[in-house]
Length: 155
Image 1 (spheres, rainbow, N blue to C red):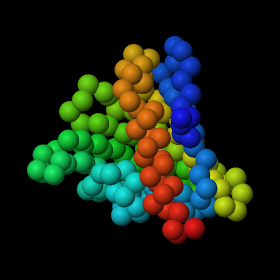
Image 2: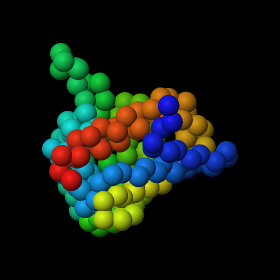
Image 3: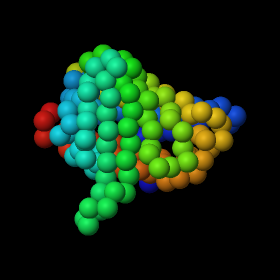
């Protein structure tokens, strides 16, 4: 089955580009990244903090049913332009991966569809390649599929 979320990674570069077209209006797609309740639904993580502003920050975590911490991530929001762009750092805590820089661009394709482009820059080519060896593509595709499903009723 072909993944709807596309990941482009050129050999020898420390970056990737992730693109996905959604059957959602631009404002609704952006809202999925802006509202903590929606972020929790499609990401499957608890939003501890989400300050949607320049120099704001965020923190997410995921726990198992027994309450054990499985995953924690945080970052700084450098730019927040509603319905246009979010520039942020992303760091997975307690992992060998260093912080990465993410440029999220939101684009209306027409009245009912929109596109998300994520340009992600890693510290090194080795770190990028390490990330790509994980089930990263399947995970982000699953999250984006859930984003579409969660927001469909709001269309």
